[in-house]
Image 1: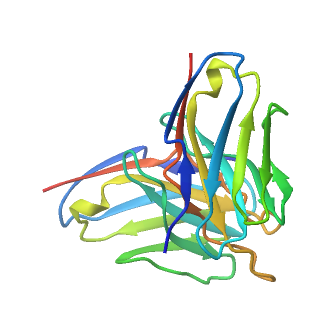
Image 2: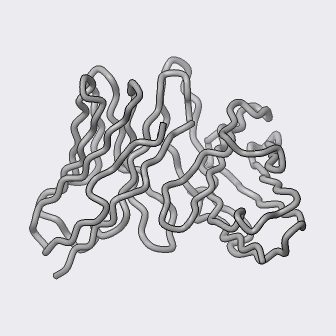
Length: 116
Length: 111
């Protein structure tokens, strides 16, 4: 049973460029969340997708956008890259369970983005 | 809304015990604990819910004090495999999937 897979594993971009990161959720999961993890910090919530719609969004600018496809996979797009966008980007999938106010997150290994 | 974890780092010998604390200024609905090894994805350990339900993982246990809005993770008779950074993530009742993570506690277990 494949877990959460992310691609690419590493990426180097120049300021001002655009980047797309990809995520395939764990089999059977329908919800995808994206987190940004700076060095030495905990993951920071970017947004969450469910039923192909952005359901929740963290405190990130509009340069960060995403998409969820019918097969539940997801993309994270970042435009006009800044040096401060350098971080590990984690995708986490979970299963929506009606009436249950929590759902464990299953994380991928992340994409290490370096902006120069 | 980011929870505060303490201590920032712990160094142990195999077989010793450790406690990691997580506190929040906001009312908590759930507290999630994850462990992340260097270069790897965070791995789910357990969830504690308001009302006292608890789910465990391996031989690690945790408590949830609703009044104090705190959770503690207990690692007893630590093993080398316990080394890593432990994160608590806090969620409210209306924030399915959205967790606020602390800055982490780095645990190192030596033989």
